[in-house]
Each structure stands twice: as C-alpha cells, then as structure tokens.
Length: 86
Image (cartoon, rainbow, N blue to C red; front, top):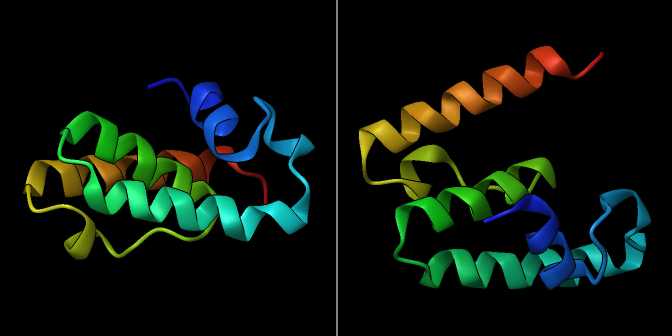
C-alpha cells in the first residue's frame, strides 16, 4: 500500500496538507474500521502507520499480535520521532 493511495481513499487527496480538518475525524473512523477488519499483516501495518501519523493509532499490544510487528512499529515510531523537529 502506498501512503498516497491511502490518503486518496480516506480523504480524497494524495496530500495530507490539503485535507480539510473537518474531514479528518470521519476519515480516521473509516481507517479504524478497515484496520479492525484487515487480516493482511502488511496492509494492517500500513493502516496503523496512517493512524499513528494522525495521532489515532491503537496501542501496539492491541494492534499487533505478532511481536515482530510490534517491534517494527516501535522502530517506525523511533524513526519518525528523530525525523520530526521539536
């Protein structure tokens, strides 16, 4: 899954900066529903990543059964923390 494709699907644009703030809660709710239904590990991780970027992700122990997936999520969180200026 490409992040731009997810943004297009849930928010109608490929650029997060163009999303109307009023549309964010509805789009986030749709992502959460799809995340809960998704069984493919890679797709679930992509949806969780988008939820994380929107500050709406579930806790890792709830989101991922597999310890490797939780570790990958922690690594992503660390990478984003380093890349994001304070």
